[in-house]
Amino acid sequence: MTAIIRASSDNSASRRPLGLAMRRGFVGRCPHCGEGKLFRAYLKVADFCPACGEDLHHQRADDAPPYLTMLVVGHFIVAGIVAFEEFAPPWPIWVGILGWMGLTLAASLILLPRIKGALVGYQWALRMHGFGGAEPAEA
Ligand SMILES: [Zn+2]
Image (cartoon, rainbow, N blue to C red; front, side):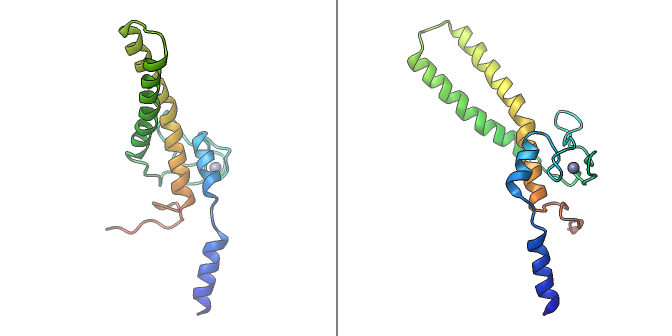
């Protein structure tokens, strides 16, 4: 009985701040310390935090970052196109196509690593995929 109570109090004492971890990941910093760089390349997550040594290789963001990026960017771009076509003066179609394509590309490239970083922070805060210290069980 004592062991059960101790185990549950240990879990609550070592809670990780979800919002802070996601914000740190969003700006490309380690979700644990907020100092070290999260990425070693554009979308490559570093194996370890260079500042605090936190294991970061446990992350499994997989397809979630591109999916969420398309979801967010698509909604803003489509709303922008509809609003612009409704309220702005007419302009040549090629200007619209190139402009909206460029904006879509730029927004996607800017948002993608930020969303991936926030998701890594989410996984770290919730101790998913081995971030809790124990290796995940093999199937
Ligand atoms: Zn760190």
